Length: 517
Image (tube, rainbow, N blue to C red; front, side, top):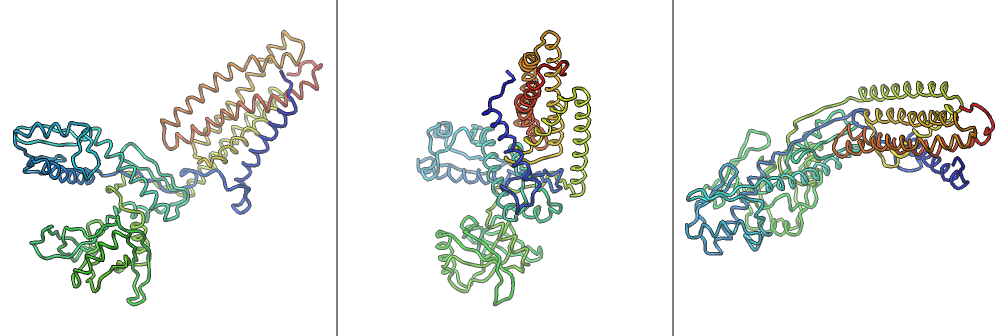
């Protein structure tokens, strides 16, 4: 029926006022807002930088296999099975074993309940494939094992990228997974991504190792260059301390040398290990190695047992700040390569906003004029409801702090068309009812009731399409699907509650008038 109770009228009014109140938040200065929420502008509207990063999992796979080879050797030694000629070749572990033990070894890898080493978590047999190649056993990652490894690496990379970007204070970054080995970074408002690229391009793998020119070093030595690319040193492969033991790192000014340094604090385990290493190696150089290059190699003058230290290396304050940031956020599990980069200037973003607003205004005005001339008073009701519908839509987007993109504006324009389409279906149905029914109230009520199925079918199928686009699409497509989906819900509410309320009021006051529509 066209009848609306006082409770329904009050409820509809309160809902409309609430979302008008929320939507108006976008027009106020940050200091004068009622709540700390607003619609965020996407990269294409605000301008900024777009980076698509690909994770190079080759070092992760190699490191994992190296660790696994040590576990295998220790595990089978404890079982009295000698593993010989173990080596890592082309992403697979090759080792020999006596013929009488070969099947036992294969069974161990294929047994779900096997524990390769009591000091390590349970070995997952589904992560590896083992092949008996004549006298040599070959162990490689299975497809499932590679997927698990890449997923884990991507999750770690995503978290560390987020930490690094949050530390810089970038405004509302968007950091998302893409596939199982890529990370998408969108930085609205940032038109010079050089510093971000520099920070994301560093793995930040920090180690402390002794300088050693002794080729008989039991751990082996390797030649590493300083960051200046000119000098080099032979450094022991033995890692005294790693970045995992860092609690904090901050840029500081050293008053004695009047240079900028990075001050660091170690956790309890790191402080104990560092104190022991420095106490027994006074007079030796300790190389501070970052991503395979020596930052500095100071001489140990005294025992450092406090867990506090400094890294010097001719830093500017900016480079010291960035190094401290990298160390605080942790090392990436694998190197990140930038495979796609786009920068949208603020002027181009503003042009997109202007173009979107003009398109929305032109479409809105044309629709308003057509509906008004077509349906007169009811056209005016439709147009007023359309404005309320858009405000409610903006209010919902504000409430959830949605990001508005150019395709999102297209979704809003489409919402306007669908809202008008629903009203046209209703009014045309009412015209048909009036041909057979002289009572205006019954005819209007029948028009709303009998057109409901067609309107719901059309909107629900579109809503399902929007949901599929949201879950299957990415970036701009998500923006379009969000505004379209929310717009469909607000359209149904405005048509069957707001517009119907005003229609009911008008028809009730003019129930005896002929040719209402």
